[in-house]
Amino acid sequence: MYKIIATDMDGTLFNERSVISPYSREVFRSAYDKGYKIVIATGRHHDDARRIVEDGLGIEAYKISANGASIYTPNDIRIAYHPIEEDLVRKLVALETPKEVYIHLYMGDKWYCDKDDIDSRIHQAMTGFMYEITDYKTFDSFNDCTKMCFIARDEEGIKYMERTVEEMKDDRLSFFFTMARCFEAMDHKADKALALNEVIKAEGIDKSEVIAFGDGMNDLNMLRLAGKGLVMGNAVEELKKSLPKCQIIEPNSQDSVARYIEKHLL
Image (tube, rainbow, N blue to C red):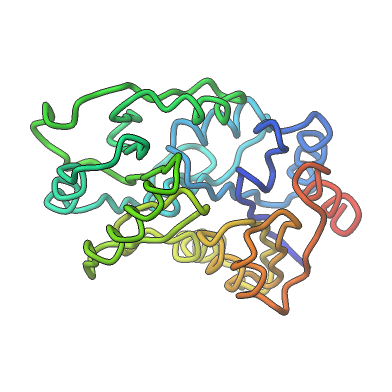
């Protein structure tokens, strides 16, 4: 029997409009009322994740944010925190980037971007949590940065990011592409699976009692850790190929996470 339901947000619990549907909200509330522990595991900022849980789901849940850089309990107590070491952030923000590469940075309770990335705004329909445009050269310190995200809007930008991943390799960094046009940098201890394992230990259960849903390569280890990992139909092909034994369900546009929970767990 499963006791924890862990889910990614974008491309998974969120529908194609980047919101949680009323149906999904109702199913998760029913699961919560039945005693399931809910874990939201996202690449988003903690404040963004908190608003999603409170406003989008209307329940208490564990919040794994910035791909595992921080973990918060259902009553919003931080139990783990893994910021990127400051010298690495300085190297990354000092890189000369092509015009169509946007550098996003989570630092403290703020989300920054080096220029106005209009396409990123559409993903904030649920919470309204938004970045501030800033010049990173004006920052005195980068000692509270949990994630950097490089988003390319053209082919030149993608090639630049591929080169950067190779050139900036460091044992203290975790680098991976979450989408074809987006790669993210975190501390090497920031991982959804490691974070989910902390929740498992806190709840005193076995990993076999966890069911998890995801669509991106940042979900890979979490899906491997869970007793049952489910891959979204809209997931990146690399994830599907990496998890050949995992069941593939319908895409996020069909409220597939909620439909699976209602059919098999409620």
